[in-house]
Image (cartoon, rainbow over all chains, first blue to last red; front, side, top):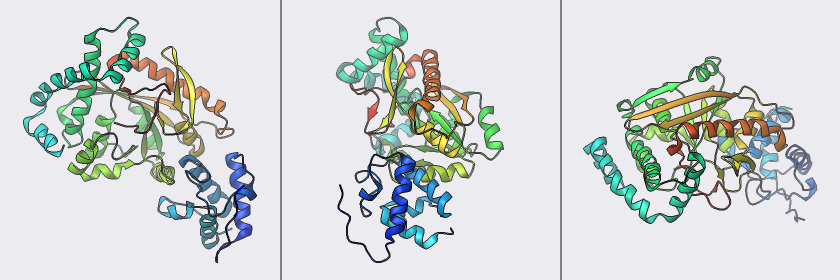
Length: 93
Length: 288
């Protein structure tokens, strides 16, 4: 479906894929994890998630990686890639 | 608009209320859509064909609550005669330092409670609403008393629910109106006054995910300067398992809809959903 863009410096492809699988599973999305473009928007137009979906992602990230996403970390919720980079920097597990 | 608000505050409520009669009469004659919606609703709630006076009374109740926001949100809420029932349900939860979702509706008005929360510091309450909803009245009112702005979370952004969670984690109250869908929000079809109407699942899913209780709230305008506030516990904890499947949430949503009907019968002229299209209850500008 989507054509993944070129990996950027700081991007962690493996973590992105792991996150994609977790998100698809938790939110019961009808898309294959590998088809999610890591640079596409998670919220709204891109993957079509709403703000409750974003909350579920935050709960999932907290449980799995020990990273608390707060409303001031909004930038980390922009895309799969932004989220993976944020987790990479702050994870405690 | 700002000048209008200042004049309203200066002349005082009884004088300014006199203006509501010509304004309502104007709408009675020229607002086709709102009037049709009003008639359709009144027919179902009153069980008889509504008269012109019924529609006028409906419009007048709506205009009164909008007008009263000027006084309420400028800190003059003590002028009103406010009767409260069932608040112990809310205080019991707050006493345990638990947050809670206060689920309201467009039946009556949230504003008396908001005013008490903001100016009396009685209740730590934040509401989810559009800052510049429908008119710029909000913008003017919020500038009169800037502390109001800190008590609003705008809906439909990536971090809306994160902000909600932060308030709830601090043991605060978050007010949500549960009878209209935001844009393309997911809804559930329920029987309401003999018709099918869409109700949002969001507040119930939110309560399940965060394991917070839901308390119902209705702030009904009783004419004159009287408001009656009602609180009722709705759910202490909604099971999170399977919350993603709508049918798990159905009993809770139906319970809300049932209580909404009950309070509609109690104060029929307080139903302030005037812009119902064929796609019931789906709006791009939710709160007035």
